[in-house]
Image 1 (spheres, one colour):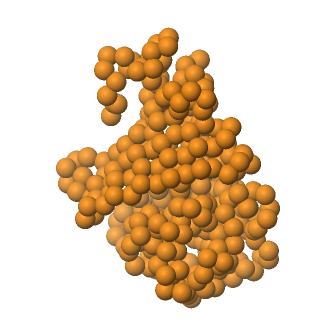
Image 2 (cartoon, rainbow, N blue to C red):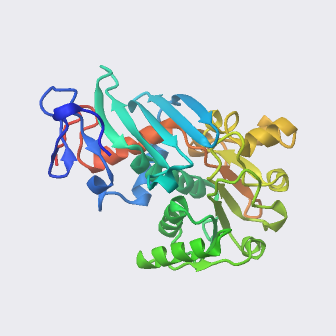
Image 3 (cartoon, rainbow, N blue to C red):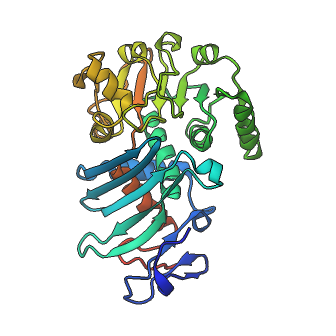
Length: 342
């Protein structure tokens, strides 16, 4: 996928490069530009560092047509500039042989407003989503966690296996459950090729009951994770829901857990995971004990080893912005000038 930049967009040595002061020729960064240059611990730290800056100003656009979604996420962070990610989620694209998610992110100069770089939104989303969950687990999961259960077998689930393996070297068992067991088996095989040992979990309730960390990355509209299955001390990472009609955890789990979010602005009003139980009175806004700004400042967090912690990974443009800046820094692109110094 190439943005429409006419003849001024060109690649030299992999990266698209800015030619002089020609603002129509922007660096365009894709997966092939970052191969071997990024890792999960560094990306998680980049997000943590971003939450030590002033609180972001963010705004979201959600448009839907049946099962299709158009989303726009913009953020301005003092000291980190501003940017916007726009992408579509098209349910019928699999049958067309096209990716279901497509889009771009544009970074701007903080002082002049000049566009400085374009990044493939899938690249940004992959690293942001995984690092987002990783940061939540760094704050909230028990450091001695040994067993991880992942619900879902898509691309995000693969990233979560990578993230948790990097973050918790003491993990002894990774189990993957999916409604279609063959898909879970395929993910296990892909992870094995990366040197990550995992196994299929045939029974979700049994797997969750033995887990220290449960990460769910489905597109379910009805809860797949029941609170009665979750043992004390577990950290629950909810990733999949992104629309107002989606949720992965049931009311029992929300009542039992201490609830945190990556961003109050993106999770409480837009995403069904918390929006639905808030509207039903199952939980209140006060049930959400903190976001990543609170957790990074240690104003909130895990109190005892026995409590269940739950973190809703709802994303947000400020997280996209932090991730995108880390990506272009790793690619030796100056985020202020857009010039590739590699």
